[in-house]
Length: 394
Image (cartoon, rainbow, N blue to C red; front, top):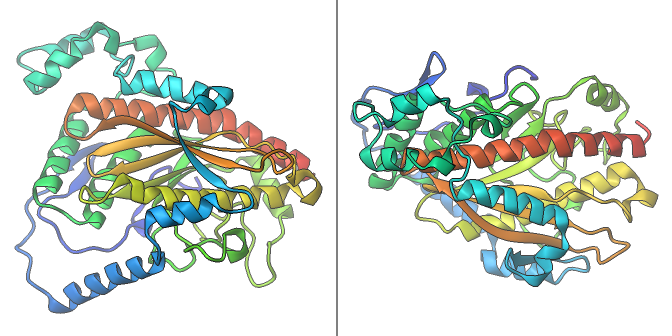
């Protein structure tokens, strides 16, 4: 995958030692032993504070003002609720929403055979009694259909993730801790158990990495901050994409070539399919909307550049899922784009509350929705990207 499909050590953001962490043993997440007591480091505290201040400064405007400015563009970015009358007009948006809504309601999120389910439901099992009751719902288990998108993660990593997330909330951990210990663990768990684990990968876009920015900057609105998001699910390049990359040219003389709107080295050759923004529990999920809007709009412009000037005006980009994780809670949004020959409007449709990390049953909701998103990436986005390469004569 380039090698492997989950986030490796080289992509991790350095952070202080913690009381509790999640490790990997033979494919399962386990709680590590307690770390030595942390020693107060004034310099580290100042660095963290300065980093937070710089992050604030980079935004300049509040999230609501950023969204207002996006709505005022010549080709605006609007935000609509799924309940809006306009939502039913876009069939691809409604189809994705309806499929995700069933999973968010817990319908068909489990894919266990009878023996596995009996073990889980047993009073001697390790499930919390409240979870055990919900695992008894007959409509929650659909072995044949659920296995079309992925397999069930082991009970041990799920239980450990619940425990770590609850501890994170109890300790009022900062955003890096939620990001590293909870959100990344959830995404990796979903990728590893997806039917498309060998065809997709997850990459990080750490804001501390200078190259992980919108590049060239002209792909984004000059008056808005060039904000990055935290993670992307990308297509692992096959021969079709690798051969086309040899023909690709940089968008600007002073930069390097990339399929995406960023020249970060870890994603230059891997087309981004899904963008994920993460927040700590004390932040609002709405703070992630302008970041996703700015970032994804720049991606759409990059794709239009790839199509060429003549074709760009009529380029139809599939509606794309967006994910925001805020502390325990996970949300699904969908972004759609109309060609500039029509309204030229980009719409963010909000939002489905798909699950959380407070218990095993709700973690299975999140995993099921992430599996659905990954199925979209492989069965919708990859074929569309091939058609874009054909259009670009690559």
